[in-house]
Amino acid sequence: MSNSNKAGTRSFRHSLFEDAQALITGTLFVALGVALFKQAGMLTGGTVGIAFLLHYASGLPFGALFFCLNLPFYWLAYRRMGLAFTVKTVCAVTLMSLLAEVLPRWLQFAQLNIWFAAIAGGLLIGAGMLILFRHKASLGGLNILVLFLQEKRGWRAGYVQAALDAAILLSSLAWVAPERIGLSLIGMAAMNAALAVNHRPGRYLAI
Image (tube, rainbow, N blue to C red; front, side, top):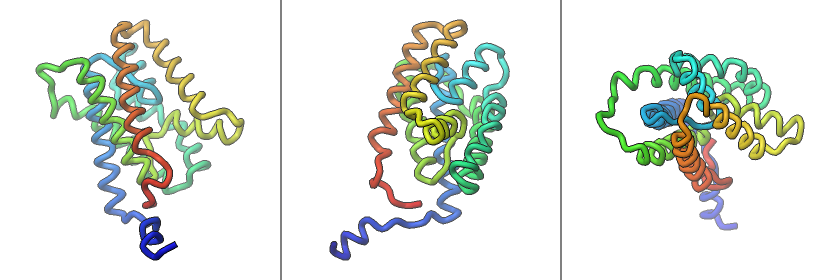
């Protein structure tokens, strides 16, 4: 292999500043997507979806629910992904919880097309998660549990995640109109498309 090819595949470690700006940027993207979903009366899968569901059912603040739901998963994150990943994830979850509460005061939609909210919100959430993943962080929750079950029980992560997301959407029918569930599926498809196209092994080698 030539030196130029070796240089092209060499990975580089992120600096503390790079990780910090990534956590802020990625979490802000996700929070903006969540704000669009919330304004349109939609929800999504994962821990964010459970927080949405409990918010619609109880009226409790989304940010506080999201923060509390993630607490049981930090031990799993530490066991499976290590201390650095867990610390970054705690920071991202905390920032996400705060942004979810303050963004409605800073950003208000006088008019919002629900189809735009579904697609743009999904893409923003996917892009934000991508940034976090590339800096060895996440928004915690069910993703960690799914990976843990795959490692310990051999359950396919994709199937388990899909089953959990389906259960969340079905459970929300008591509080969310069916057409909003359909829009939520479009938003989830946009989010997954952003991740599937851009989050591939070998495409990004920094650590």
